[in-house]
Image (cartoon, rainbow, N blue to C red):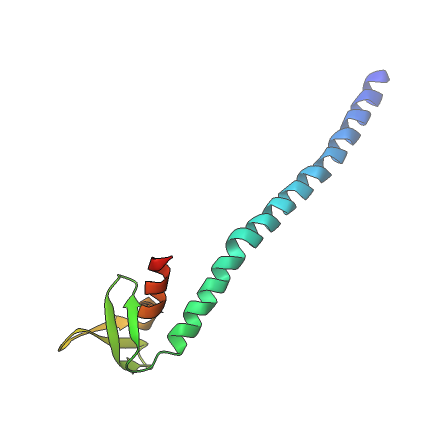
Length: 110
């Protein structure tokens, strides 16, 4: 009889110890979201806003690090024609145009 009482008490203790573990997991997730996920989402939102505001003549940098000037934007195919040298025009997906030349130069000077 003492054995079953001991096992019941042990089971009660184990059930009680799960709550702090769950709270710790939730706290870790909240911390990760606040310091990692949330800033990344904000940055993605800024990039999308920049891509949607592109216009002819903007100086841009592509995802591959190519600097150029926007010559034409094809919204139906989601492509951008970028002049990288006099008379040299490349076509890239609009999603690979990440920033303006001025913003990238400011980031390099920091």
